[in-house]
Length: 380
Image (cartoon, rainbow, N blue to C red; front, side, top):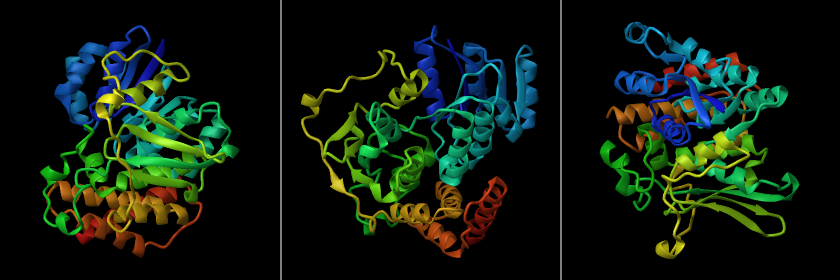
């Protein structure tokens, strides 16, 4: 039986991870979780799964739950995230938190020898060089949970890195994929959150609409697969049936297909190198679908893609700025403080203002992250 810790258990990836644990109770046991502020959902999780350690965001919530569940250990704050991440009896850490807050717990878990099922893009985007170096040093596996990176991971099983011609990430295009830039003026938060294919959290859904989500995935792919940016392409594919592809230098292309269901890549990360049945997932019927559509990526239409490629190629602290500026700008849009297209404007201003620092250590990354957030907030 594999013992599982989850950072961000009440979010979209976290709750779907619990679906898998629920379906395979003899294979997995939940031992520690972080839950943020959703106490009602947290109570249900605690009653059902009986984890040994629970971390919340606020001290007062920690006190409240401790009084209700005296047999369970509770903690809180950023230190609590680290406690969950390095929980001694856990075999696998599922990092499903949103934002750069997931970076330090991941590094600590790697040092503790935990296998990492990583759904937190920002960890690799802001500090990919540190994370991959630590994983190699400690002999720790980083298993991707994103559907695109899981697809690539599956396509590469049994293959040699030297034979790879390019990686092809597919993108649904998000909520506004059929609109021109002119038609994006004045779009509402509600419209932006209406993703045509996937059920995801608010932040990642907005990132999908701006295409920043795919930009961050390009940077992730660079680190996960040791691939130069010139060999990472993005292809618009509105059905989200092909989750990504790998082209080899003999012109063969291997693709991973399936219905849009995040539980499939989550479960693959938990069971790797084995597979388990997932009876609750809908089977893919290609005859019923009949057609699949593909389109080239237009970086002039989706400017965040261009920002991501440029920041990734520059490296150093530039991806940290990209991510931090995006997080603040997306939060501002969700709170209706700025309009949709201003997300791009704020990211661009932050990137232009920053002076690149090559090979930053963790303290520099954290400082740049903080400074970028302060700058973008000042623009509000």
